[in-house]
Length: 464
Image (cartoon, rainbow, N blue to C red; front, side, top):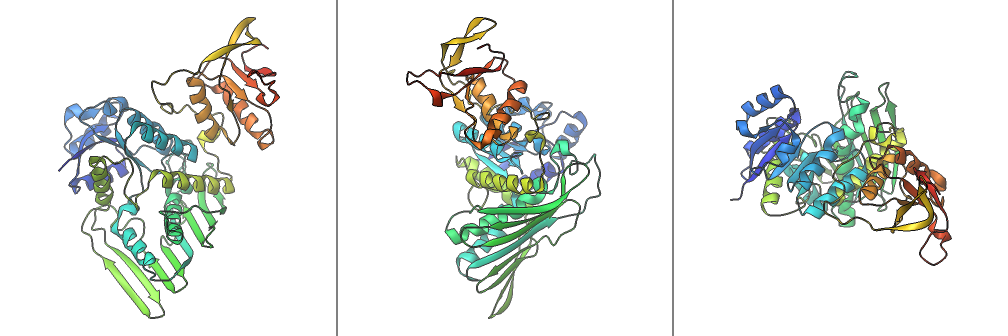
């Protein structure tokens, strides 16, 4: 049997859960840890018998370790996408804790990198790997309650407000939606896919309300989702309010309740679960008995899929398109509450390394009459990129930084799309870009037909 050898980045509590789960996974073995904190690195290494040579003091050293096949990322949220990219570009398979990125744009970047590198990538919603979810889908596809019409899914707890806690720290992308909101959203989307015969479905409408606390993160959030199939759903999450923490499905022929959908067995196991089915014929309870640690299902699925050479996880675990769709709903839900993350704020947005595939040729450039820097001719990239459909710097910076890294320095800023919003976002990005070269704005819609723009002007550094 092929064994997938794992390294863990970030030895926090969830990393302990994954490491414990690996102990029961026939296809996986933990061999390495990376942490910049020597004491935490030693404690974790001792707990799991990791050789001293594979207790790395940098993330770069772990992803360069030839004894590591796959990397599990469990750092605070803002570094999930960055470290997933680091590992993927180093040729490693990756499982990253949710959320895979602070927004959908980051998740797109990570999944595209995985596809480019031909490496496995999975967002770690461990509940999707538990047999309870497969059984639920089998019941629905078998018509146990007819057509699903409405879903209620909640995940909330009350943690005392502590500005130093990652849950309440805006700089660490705290708040309920990014911490646990992805659970009800992903479950609802999964169930909605049954109606369409797909692995998942994305809502046509997202409405939300909630409470943004004094630290700037959502403490309580409620949402309403509407699907093209007619299915509706109520979702809720919280870090400052205890909730039902259940999933209830109402169908044309009955009701199904999952009293413990997210963490059956919690940390140590057994991970037993219960499914309650109520129809006009009566009420029955299915008890699913599983002695395994909850995280063993996730660890074994990922280890086996990697050993088999797959690049995406077997359903109902999260695939690439599923993770992107989930992130898009979380973005829309946050927008309803007015929660803006550090990646979407110009002052705190930072470069996401690894978006560009290494080794690609640079975009060629050409001299254009009248475009100079300090009176000297300046070459303009032969390709011009538009700036539409980038509503905030969190989405725009990823594309534009990569564009300039590839040699591009020309942008179409024709003020056609978004009423000038997208050009304003580009204007926020250019001054903070890591690429120091001057940038040129152009209006190719005024083109004379000879392939040269008739109107160019400086965005940064250039004379015209």
